[in-house]
Image (tube, rainbow, N blue to C red):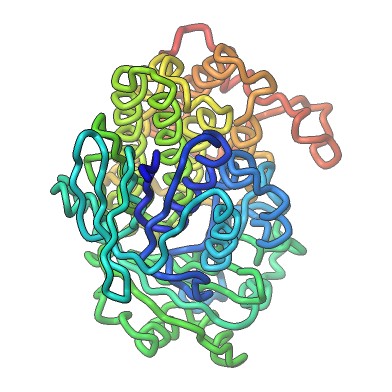
Length: 536
């Protein structure tokens, strides 16, 4: 048998691609080549277990898993940032009080992958315990050699070959991809049995504390400090994931690469969290680490009918929980390209060329976001500006394209090209500025407790999906976003106080406590007047 698509790897990227192919190209014959066997152990085998808007939309909408995600995994209350000052007594906090406008989830990766396996099994041939060895391409058919754990060899034939093998990076090693290792960030992480509740650790009776009564532990929690941050992520089954992520140019990895050392480090740098873990004797279920995890391969999608997705393509950084976003975008592009090729279309001009270019833009934007950023995490005003401007950029660009289902249209992507490039240029400008000496000596002070509700970030998030998803409506939204983003960037670089523009003025008669978020019209006030010039 010659399959239409063979996928190397049955992790999240491979399983979701198999699911998407079965839904969007039901006539395609698909197989998965997996070097292990299911079920997966429920262990901390990945860096982070959190989704944000784009990746969550992919799981809910594209893959049709809305009911499953809500029933099996925990709803996420956004990203929450705390600067804990080591002892935690005078911590600062930025986040939301209510759940966000778009659903997202805290996921147990082992559980999700086991369930995805069961979802795809009826439509996909799965070769378990088969290790990828090599391949030849003969008459436009891939002859993929595998080795079973019992020592027998097998040749699997397919017209398309997709590498979803994660850090094994089978195609990169076979074809010698050019790879960059742009960041010096590393991580250690572990799960504990029990719910580590933020509300039991960091609480304040300060009258300005806007988060009293909030379900803060449902957030992906970031505890920030110079050169590092610590995550707390609640998981289904009353488990908690805890990770320490750090820049090796600031923090010596030797201080952290064992469970004992990691706990000693927490005792010194996040004492309140350490005391919570020790006093309540949470059992540690597993411990892992990965040094200098960041890499980006140049290759993505080829006219020779191969592709690389997920961590076989790139891993940038877990700070904003974007791993599933990359999988969503790459899988969608690959699925669209395979569907077009099977339908007899020329995939070079309309798919391969355009998608490779788009992924280049996306990766550049994420790299610019994280480059040299950790060393300033002891500056609360920097955290305030950076995390919000990063979120606005994300919601304004790739979220708009993906969540309005425009990623499949090459013509649409080409129309957005100049808009996205201009926003990337502005993002690069502001990222460089907030790391500059001029910004570092600004002398501005952010409030101790900062609510995102009613902020420009919340409104841009609300406006991701157009009521009418036609091309012109989505293009108009992107043009508006580019105009607004440039004004934000110019204001910050001209040393404006971010607090002044963070909460856009709305109609005075509007009662924000009772009015639905959809009723708030914020875009065309004094600071954001109607766009008159063409953007893009």
